[in-house]
Structures are given as structure tokens and as C-alpha cells.
Length: 341
Length: 291
Image (cartoon, rainbow over all chains, first blue to last red; front, side):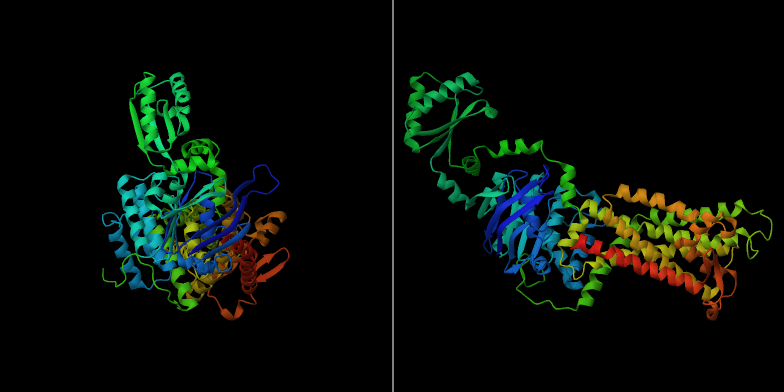
């Protein structure tokens, strides 16, 4: 349904030092009726890819097809098929939500009656009855995002594209949006969403791609990606708050143990140890080893591989670390300029 | 739910083949309506736009109330002379702000919302601004025409009023084109407001709104005689001067410029050329920014 082929996009002029290569040969195929997640830290190129897909931005190279329509040749044809829910919610504060929906309906040339009926449907679906006739300027973040989702759905698009749809939302709004996205998928809409929440993509997406520095570094179903890693994850805590010295000592002890593939010290969690091991038998062996060395065990938790582990495996760092690394680098002014016409 | 289709399922491929004209008018009307809803809910622009020229009319008109009779060409009172200038200034100021809503839409990303919609023609965005600002500036100017009449500064008569409206329309189109061009050219609303601020009063002073060319030093007289505001002011002033005779708009001189004498028809032709020229000038810019 969506095909991105070898997309490249550079911001700023090529020779200058502040030029940023936002996309570096991104190829993606989203099957029809799929809920597809685009996962990656801030600055990985998710928004750029989605903006290109929605015809807001021209790529330097590459092809974009939506339901067989070449979006670069026939952007208007692509726009009719697409609903786009942008990250920065641009809303007219003076209009009421209903008026904004009506405006959007007219921009999609819906006949008046159909438009109004459709607006009623969406108000019910997204539970907006209580506040839809108030001015948009008074809305909370969650209300705005729900309204924005409604504007994206107004013309019954075959493809819905959402850029970080639940960032900073209250739990109730997030649950509403998740529910609607799942219903959409069940009723045949192709949904592509970007997110830097691992749990969100894990819980929602049928397939996902991990984007890192403008490249796709992993692609598949969440189960396949996690399954391909193999091994069990174990979190071990010697005591509630350990220290580095002890953690290093225990690590060298465990690394010697047969069937232990990897031991990582997690500073953020009171120097707990994250292990990758081969099966349950190894865990029993670990317990004995620790008892022999006279070490207490405050907690020992076993889990399957998560998408975080997939990300860690592919990039050598956790998604949280990647977020922290780019947190100070973003230039709000430059980003506003990129988005402005 | 009255619809047979489930609320969320996409529509089967249908060829929605309404006519281009119907689609363009639907999107243009919707965009124009939005601007008017904003105006009605936040009427300060409208109020200020009428109030400011009104203050000009009353205060400036009173400033020269005791000027010797016969000082001005034509011999009327200063208030009567000033009326035409303030009417044109009102329309001009309103049109100069045409770019502001567009600039805010650019800055806040609302324009992107419009651009992802399958608009039949993106000219609808520009067209809506022109429709909105034209009606707004006409309403404001006509309010001034009415007030000037009540204050005893004269009334142009029915034919004269038609000429006033046509002249203002031409000026408003030209200035709107300029302002919309700036709205896409400048980086933000701060810069746009600065340009508007700087352009506004000098253009008023360097025109025949407040004094005739004969009062001015040569250099200022030249400036005034080249100022587009003057080409709008003088036909309107002539309409106020007496009953307008249509057959004479191409022969009666309304402006004695240093470079020659102009009739109402000449002035209107210049304004038309200016409006058309400016729209042609900004077109490539709009095409680039909206494509």
C-alpha cells in the first residue's frame, strides 16, 4: 500500500557544515491493512520520511508510491488517499473543533450532508461530544490530538499516517487513540505511525521498521525481530541498591558461567545486571553460583527479548541513551524553518 | 450511525468527479469563511481599522479648520479635501495587512494542514485572502464615507460612489498582492509587521491625501505624483467635488502632476496596471511556496 524506495533527503546546502543528512536511502514497504510502526530516537528521520510521504516535502532522490499512485508525479492523487496527523498540532484557536472539521471536510470536497454526518460519526467515535463546540484554544493536548485524528479521518482515507500520535498525552487520550487505530486496521485502513515509545510500537504494530540516523536498521514483525535475537533476558539485583565495585565483581563472576552470553551493568537501575542467557537451566546454574559465592539475591527477573533489546542489538546502545544523546543537539529554530513554507 | 459503511472503514475507490469550479468554490468559500469567523470573534482589527481613520478625519480635519478660505484648489473646506485622502488611506491600511493571516498560518503550521488536503487549486488559499481583505477594507472605507457625510464633509452621489468603490477595489487588489507577496517572502510576522509599519505613514504623507501637490516642494511633489495612493485619491476627490459625469472621466484633469495632467481614466488605468503587474510579479513566488 505504501512503498518508499531509496529515499534521500538533506537539509541545508551540501557543502556547508550545518547540512544534515536526514534520510540516507530509506526503503520501506507497508502492506495493505497493516498497522505499521516506524520506531527510532528523535532525529532519526521519522518525521522527514512521513512528510515526504504526505507530499509536504520533496526528497532529493527516491520514489514514493501510495496505493499505486506515484506521490511525486501526482501529489494530489496521493493526498486524496492519505490522512495525515502531524506531530506539531496546528490548530485554529478561534474556531471550534466542529468548525475546524467542517473546514477540513470542505477542503476534501465532501458534500455538505455527508460532511456533517461524518463529523457526527467521528465525534462519537473519538468521544469528543463534551467539548467539540468549544474553541480549540481551550483544548488540552489530548483533546487536540483526538481532534487532529478526526481531521485526518474525515475523508475516510485508505492510508492514515500519524507522526508521534501519543507523545505527551494523558492515559485516557492515549487509550482512545490506540483503540481507534486498532479498529481502523481491523476495518481495512493501512496505518503508518512513528513513535519513539517502544511499548507503543510493541503493543500496536503488526510490523515495524527501526530507523537510526536516516537508515532502516531492522524491519519485521515485533515477534520475529525479538525471536531472532534468541536467548532469555535476566535482570539480576544483588541488593536493592548495589554499587559499582560490587557490580563489576559479580559481572566477572557471571561472565565465567557457561551459557551466559552477555552481562551489562545498568547504572540507571541501582547497578543491576542485565544478562542474556541460553535457557532456564542456565538460570538455575546462576543461582547456585551466587549462593556458593555467598551473595544475596534481592531480585532475579526473567523476561523475553523486548524491542529495546532489538534496538540495543542493532545499534549498540539503548533507545533511551540515543534519545539522551540527541536531546541537546536539536535546533528548534532550524526545525521550525524546515517545517515552514 | 446512519451510514451503511462502518465509521472507520475506507471508502471503496470511487471516482469523485465533481466539476473543478464547484470544488474550487467549495474550498475557497470554506477558507474565506474561516477568516470571517476569526474577524467576528476577534473584531479588534475591524474596530481599529475604522477607528484610526475616523480619528484622522476628526482631528486632522479640525487642525486646519481656520485656514484662510480659498487656500485649497477648488476652494472647499479642508475637511472636505481630507475626506478622499482618509477614505483611500483606510482601504490601503486594511489591504496592507492582508499578508498577516497568511504569515501566521505559515508560522503556526496551519498552512501545512491546508497543503496536505487535496485542494483542487492552491490558488484558493490566495483567493480566500483577497476576498476577505477586499470585503473588509471596503466595509471599513464605506464606514468612513458614511461618517464623512455625517460630519458634513460631502457625499459623492450614486455614480460617484460607484467610482469610489471601483477605485478602492483596484488599489486594494494591488496592495493585497504586495502584502501577500511579502507574507511568503519574509521569514516571520515580526518582519512583516515592521515593513507594514514603515510603509504605512510615509506613503500617506508622500501622497495628496493631506495636501495638494501645489503645497509641496518639487521633490515631494514628484514623490506624491508617483505614489499609487495619489492615483486613487484624486479620482475620489473629483467624485466628491461635484456631480460626476461619466462622459468626462477621460477628459477632465484630476491630477496636475509635474510630468503632465492625468484624468480619472488615466489614474484608473495606472491602478489596474499596478494590480495586474503585482499579481504577475508575485505569482512565481506563490507557485514556488505552495507547490
